[in-house]
Amino acid sequence: MFARGLKRKCADGEEDGEGALAALRAAPSYSLQRQSLLDMSLVKLQLCHMLVEPNLCRSVLIANTVRQIQEEMTQDGTWRVTAPQTVGRAPLDRLVSTEILCRSAREAEPPGPGLGDGHAPDMVSELCVVPSAQALQSPQSSVWEVDSPRENRGSFPKSLDQIFETLDSKTPGAVEELFSDVDSSYYDLDAVLTGMVGGAKSGHSDTLDALASAPAPPPSSSCKDLGELDHVVEILVET
Amino acid sequence: MAGAGGGGCPAGGNDLQWCFSQVKGAIDEDVAEADIISTVEFNYSGDLLATGDKGGRVVIFQREQENKSRPHSRGEYNVYSTFQSHEPEFDYLKSLEIEEKINKIRWLPQQNAAHFLLSTNDDLRINLWHLEITDRSFNIVDIKPANMEELTEVITAAEFHPRQCNVFVYSSSKGTVRLCDMRSSALCDRHSKFFEEPEDPSSRSFFSEIISSISDVKFSHSGRYMMTRDYLSVKVWDLNMESRPVETHQVHEYLRSKLCSLYENDCIFDKFECCWNGSDSAIMTGSYNNFFRMFDRNTRRDVTLEASRENSKPRASLKPRKVCTGGKRKKDEISVDSLDFNKKILHTAWHPAENIIAVAATNNLYIFQDRIN
Image (cartoon, rainbow over all chains, first blue to last red; front, top):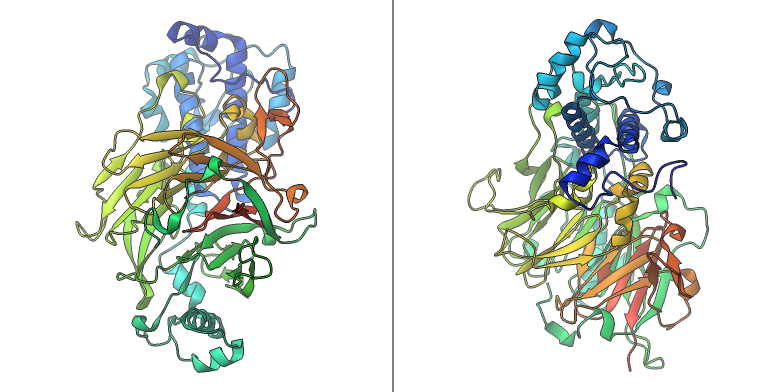
């Protein structure tokens, strides 16, 4: 049920108000959990195309979670922006799993900016004054270049824009394209059901013949008088 | 559609003794993705029950006439027809596979004057179809931003008002519902009403938005209320009050402390549906471990039941289930860590006039009815 090594107490575990919240956020375990949540979220975004069903809603929610974490880390001063030239294409295995993170005792989050990690102090101080909204819209796509104090995670091959576009691939016309080659006998089912509700049930074939010209048309056929319908089964298909 | 209070439908949930009636589907442990039921709907009279699955297959069950020799069992549902809605297609222009999954089946009311249909064609648009014009639809809501990177909210569900054919609602991934009136404008980008419950700041977490995302919205039969389902609760809203719901029912609050894990295994994105009984006095929704929950709005009582093969003897009463949330686990209780998160009941349907329910458990369809005294 639980991920290996993942603590039960989540980021939402506090109950005592602002003082406790601040204390909780300063605790190393909170930072670790937050970082692991961030890592997990970024991996999920990258692998969203591997789902059985494409799910734009899920990707949007995950992206929003990443933004929230980034915003909070920016306020804490723990979010780093790398200079464009130092950004490489880190392979996905550079993202540690939550298990590895939680196992390592050395990986305590250093508080505050610019401590012992080799980043240019002026870049870091630049970040501190940049409001989070601006950071999100930076042309360098800084949203997706997460640099933790521990290691340079690099940028990601896919931009958010690309991920979302892939998942939203539908046009209003897609549905009728879908129906355009449907075998017309499919629509005779409606006739069958109509016949069945209207009166005594007869054999399928009789009803089909009798109501062969009945409504529920494919796009190519002419419109029928809806008043003849007792009811219609409508299949809504999302493409 | 059946009106409120019609047909002598007693208050649902706890005054009733729910009994197993039928189960449809393979017993196999190995479930093919294509056989997973993706939608369940009774028609307006309750005589027909339709299911759709991820493989694009539609099965329609019809209720048999009452059997005089077995007066205690109401008419059973048997397969009337089954057909393949469509085969998966490949759109060469877009290099896209169009999947065959049935997302929703809507039976049209017998006396629907408007003959309109809503389709949420995807997460960003709602289209309106008129039954006499089948070669095109009309786009009435479009929330796609110019720059997709700015996308932060999607449409999650939409439904027409049962009595006012020009009114519909749509829900979002941010926990809001917008009510639109098509008479106001052709493109319903402006809503007439906006329903959102203010967030409780003390329970804010990184998962707050995800669990507030609405997975289903359903109008009551009366048309006076609507119900929304988010990850942990169902909320009943009075259409005249946008500021907060009139009722909130906890479905599985014990999962709140497990949200990290549920995020990791993606269960937090599961989309549960909900439904009203015919008289709007009770509501039902699914949960994990093949549990489903019923809430009686009048008595304020709720019950947890399970759809399982073990409880599938004819007319066997369903025993209420209980999840142990802490402390010593009593006999017959199940602990949260023992719940099977692969057994999820996402789709349920309630007969519009009688106490007969259909519950989809992965690839099996269970039908339960109340015991006749």
